[in-house]
Image 1 (cartoon, one colour):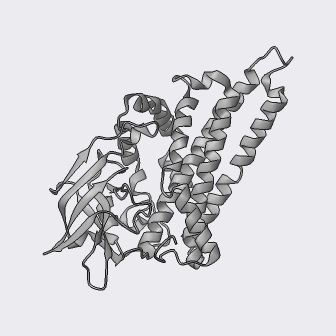
Image 2 (cartoon, rainbow, N blue to C red):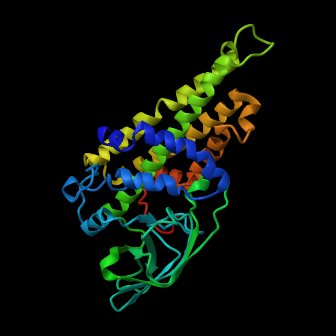
Image 3 (cartoon, rainbow, N blue to C red):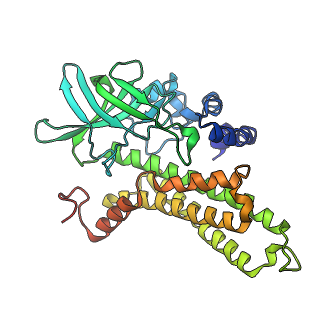
Amino acid sequence: MQACERILSDKLLHQFAERAGVYDRENRFFHEDFEDLRDAGYLTMPVPKELGGAGMTRQGDRSLEWLLKEAMEGEIFNAGHSERGNDLPVLLSTSKAERVDGGFRFTGHKMFGSLMPVWTRMGLHATWADADGGPKVVHAFLPRDYDGWRMIETWDTMGMRATRSDDTVLERAFVPDKYIARILPAGGADNYIVAMFAWALLGFGNIYYGVAQRAMDLALPGIKNKKSIAVSRSMAYHPEIQHMVADMALAFDPIGPHLDRVAEDWSNGVDHGATWPAKIVSGKYHAVEACWRIVDKAMEVSGAAGMSRANELERLFRDARCGRFHPTNTFLVHEIVAKTALGIDLGEQPRWG
């Protein structure tokens, strides 16, 4: 926590807050914030100290040490995994991987790509259908200066507008063997895959935890100053307002401890065996669902003022709704949790019927 506070100072966070509304209105990437984060060392926080990073690692897996070294050299790694029609991101793929001399060629259409304007190494995966022993999924990192890919500007969205998570079309893009991270049986997972879910989903959960906290910080002071002819004092004394505020607080309190527990267990190498996927998606799911309920109620207790584009709550309301689109979605969460509880292997085919 101390390392994080040194990197993300109050001054820096205040600057981010001042610019957030501008990015949203202009639907543009947060270039200024990104450069500030890079200069502060935020992008290399997970890199071990002996390699020059802040050492905020999880589990200490060094199987891709080249990635850590390239991160310290300034390369920007993104996640370009999402695909339409694929509700099992990373584990399966609608994209195609073709084995060629010295590497693989990738063909497909990716969406919801992170850091699209600035990445230098795109994380992607695709199905190698004719691999020996059956279909395999190839995980790779595509250098930006290689040919065979193009970005399509599709990002004009309800919320999360500053992320500019545009689409990518892969047209037999070549990736050399040195940038192939894993080759696994289709639907299979190892520590690389589970770690990817742990890092991403617990990160998503923490973001929406912050959105929920900000919504409460904005809404509650306003209630204390809000008047009505129905009450002699402020609306803080209205019983239904108090009921909603209690609901917000009750929804908020469990988010942090839940995320912390899952993250600490992961970092400390606690052996939860086959239940790890369920525990990871559960942490993200509860954070997102609680955030949505809190922001929705924050809008309601704030009154019609929350509808104004000038009100930060209006943007938080739109951003909070996007949490349910982030993987894993509610349908997959319930599938993973239920199958885990029932002892059904997550890789069993067919998935239904």
